[in-house]
Image 1 (cartoon, one colour):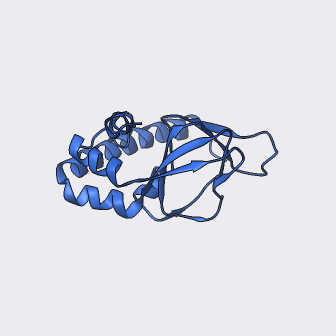
Image 2 (spheres, helix red, strand yellow):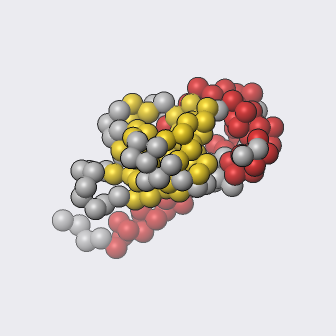
Image 3 (cartoon, helix red, strand yellow):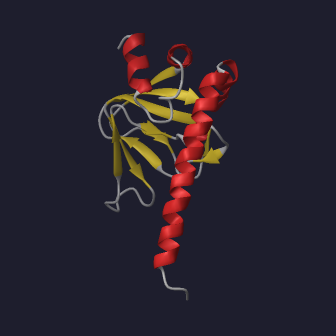
Length: 151
């Protein structure tokens, strides 16, 4: 996959869509590609997360509980795992295992934060987007609270 293809794929992610093309270029150029064999574990639930993973090809099964309990969600090509870990220190909420041969771009938190410092316009648009999403989410929570009888 070419660098331009990676930039175009990254630009389609909501969390990255606010970034300037040059900021996306720095991200795409500076990330590491990791290839996983079928059944290989990418991250484990409870471990400290150092960033996000963008799925270039293949797919990942995500497990919150036991690996064989039938509750796996799937992220496939174009998906992002660990969005919050690119911004803040966090731990993995799932165990991610390759369902097939899979390639991912690893986006370390330190790299993402460096890009935001170097491209303040991108950072400001991203901050505004996150603020808008949180405001909308809080509005939905308020509506749910109004509908829920108190205990």
